[in-house]
Image (cartoon, rainbow, N blue to C red):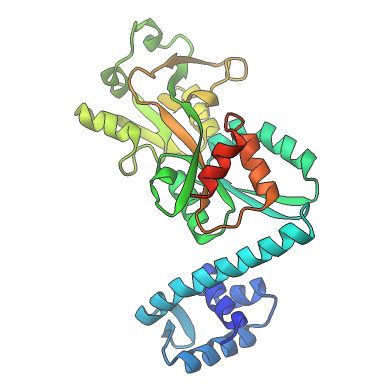
Length: 306
């Protein structure tokens, strides 16, 4: 059994069972990948993939079990490389951050600017998605760290470091009737078409739970992962927008008014997460420290050593 054979299985799954794309990722040929898979299946005595003719359609039951072990091996190989690189060339490498649009747009820029100045040789990648996708990228090893709220803190395989707390604001066009309301209620919000994040009403999130407990069904008109998209449609007077407070800027969003609705929703906390079994390189630690300036070195190291 060779590491290259395990990498072939891994890349085939990552590329949705497309052997040609897996071969491209591995910088080899399609026949070469097929040959490695055949040799591995012969050695372990099971069919790893389901097939429809020559086309791979998924993992077999045995393949699913095997793939879990392959994932662990691939991660450990990555850790070994990280350890080697840490001691041989500390100022080079690839650093991938998975995060939501709100974090990437409103919280990350200043930290990234400082990080790039300190580590100009690091190849930095930022992948955007909703909190569930961020969590998945951390678990799969596709991202070194993830920055998001709620779901990222609910997985036992991820070390979560609290970054900051925030709440929500309601935004609407100028001269909107809600400006005359002394204290906005959930019923007031439900009286208008609502434009908000696509994950706000997926699963047991804070926002959806608040409406559920109050037995109020909001009129969800449109959802998006991008706060700027939400504000664009609010400007068109298609509804009112519920967004993170840091996504509203009085000067830049001059066409909109905002009202604080923190009295309606519990405070949310944004976390930076990292897999428990990940070797943390020096530049990754420094990035985490930059994003959590309130954390003392000892507290941060205690979090990472859990």
